Amino acid sequence: MTASNTTKKTDDLKRNTDSREPIFGREVTSVFKKHFELPHFKGDNVKTIVLPILITFVFFKNLPRLLSMRFYLKKRRKKDPNRELSVLYFSDNLDETNGIANNLRHVVSYMKANGYNVNLAGCAFNTRSRGVVENGYVILIPRLFSMDQLGYANSELALPNFESVLRLFKRYPADLIELETPSPGCWAVAIASKIMGIKVISHYRTDVPSYTRTLVKAKWMHVLVLFLMRVFYRLTLPVISPSNDYSRILKEEIRIPEKSIQVLPRGIPLEQFNPSHRGHGMWEKFGGGNKVRFLFVGRISKEKDLPFLEEVWHELRQHTNSAEMMFVGSGWYLETLKFHFADCPEVHFSGEQGGETLAGLYADADYFIFPSGTDTFGNVVVEALASGTPSIVTDKGGPQDIIKDQGCGFILPFENKELWVKQLKECIDIKTNRVEAHKIMQQKAFERSRHFSLENTAKAQWAYFEKLCNKHYKK
Image (tube, rainbow, N blue to C red; front, side, top):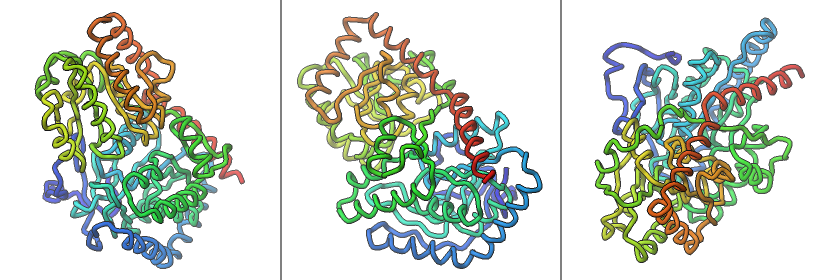
């Protein structure tokens, strides 16, 4: 696939379009021509006002083209009412390293390989010199404006070049658009979709209110963000939730009617993670030894409740020297975390990893530990289970639904240090003195992971999409 108005000249493909280090598994296969863009801004509360002003200007400027697209799409549907369903997934943070971007890439790649008519698009990160297509199917549209996301390093609020968005709609007409984040680009696509008469829904993938309370000091921003989220999700009904806990949050905090919330399973490429990767020396490669092994994989950031995990570990090491910890990932909190563990030789850092190295670290661990209370699902938890590694999660957020009543891990009260330390001590005892019990947990972990296959995810989502479109376009 190539995006509209792209060039595939060899020298353009070879040109370095991104000043960041290469991201594992992402290869540029086509590039956009150069587009006008505003300079990237540092984030602050006042500059966020620029975004609604720009969105308003863009829509007034492009309203005739949007109305023309409405007529074109309506005529197309009338001419061929029984054609194959077409779906577009759109996410603002697709060009970042995070669970949402990784999961979308996996799901859409699987769907395209198995005959589903889907496309995946987002906005190119500010480090890009132009928009690109990655791996032949991920369309990263050139940006018009971007600024740092408040309190959230290596992430941004961005508005894509709207001319490129319209070309995308014209070249790959969609019957349904699923929006993944309530950010500026998704706001723009949501409003445009309404004008063009396209069915648009949303997926609650990020606990934005909790992130805002954790990372942004200004209380008025907390109120504003919650208000905007309520408007956004009301605009994009129904809302897909990945877990029962967040269905409750959607109903109580975001005020979405219960009948407009749909719980659908998520999946990962299970074949990439397997117990067979155990014992190939990956753990030792980063300084680990033969103690009971605890592993964390994810963004090294405060909203993952890593300060709490620090407290737990410092307390645990007062009682035992039989355990070690490995952190896999990168993020703005990494250097602080290393400083706080400077006197802890049993704590190791591997940096961001992928492929066989990541699979080996998962499989070599005795337990996966994930204290976050803001994750709506928890891809990394499923990856750990698929590697045969029992997981320890909190009773707040989505990961608990993965572990609950399955015998493949433990669910602990959110930020209860005493109970977390007690459970980690028990985990050490199980691995050291109750070997068969630990092996049973490993087997149950692997078995539980089979529920979260890409095949199950694709089938469930597509059946729901067809149901929605049949109802929407027969009105």
